[in-house]
Image (cartoon, rainbow, N blue to C red; front, top):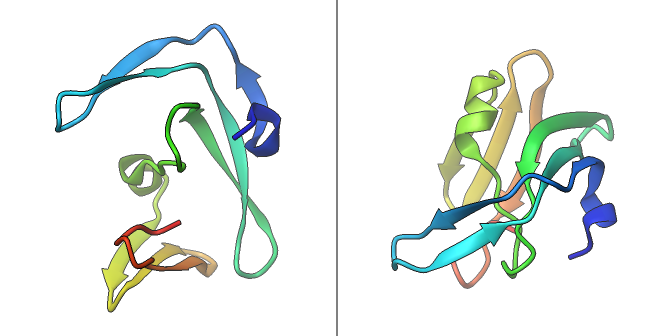
Length: 101
């Protein structure tokens, strides 16, 4: 994953480490703002998203979405994110590996 592929703004000097449940530690190599395309083709800004190049997939901070007023529902293998004003903005089906890409 290249930084410019997802991030619209970027702070390269931000560095911290995160420890996972299996005691592995991974470095966060920056943070920035990303724009996600909603199901209605509009865009939404998610700020201060961490860039972790060693992960094989992206992580979405559910707590940050909740703070912004979104509702998150996981039901019947579908991850649904709703904006209180516009309704559903993301609808993601679970993969065979129980991930929501």
